[in-house]
Image (cartoon, rainbow, N blue to C red; front, side, top):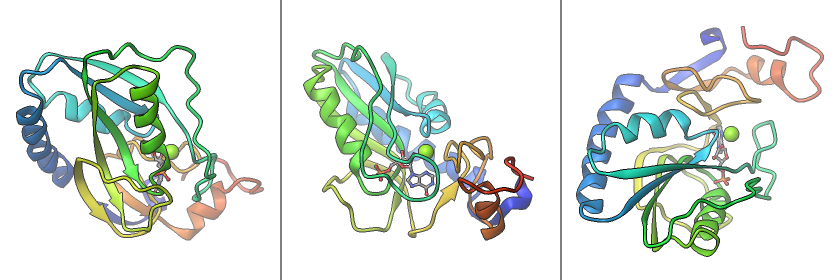
Length: 192
Ligand code: IMP
Ligand code: MG
């Protein structure tokens, strides 16, 4: 699997060091509130787990599935939240966590969902990565771990065609790996 990585953008050590700083800010800001943390699945799962364990406050955890990428490296433009019942967040201060801010559509759609359907009192947003692109939707996260250039990245929860989430670092795929796993590709369907 690591053969498919062209370059490492963020090594694991650097990610975890930055999470210590980010969690300290979040802990200070949410002190004394009824706090819930909501992670957007699947991409935020690893970031969420590492971040949560650095926030020593009483809190509840919810996960909301959302997808705007339907395979490949470009956004489909439409965000789906396939959830029958919204979590109950009345009177709660919510920290909404996602892996990456790209077009902004996912974060904006889930934020609106939590306010309108789940009754959250306020929602602060937190992303591991903020990509340097012009956003389709105006949204500035309250907490950002890293700014990255406009490249498609994998690892530490981020996937390409469902793969590479379990890499402990964040990296960029080789063109060969992208082509091999591309939708409709006739070659092998698993990373090497
Ligand atoms: P947005 O709605 O365009 O901001 O996209 C956010 C979602 O797209 C994230 O939750 C990711 O799942 C996915 N995504 C965006 N950029 C990347 C990337 O570089 N690698 C992997 N997934 C990405
Ligand atoms: Mg994804």
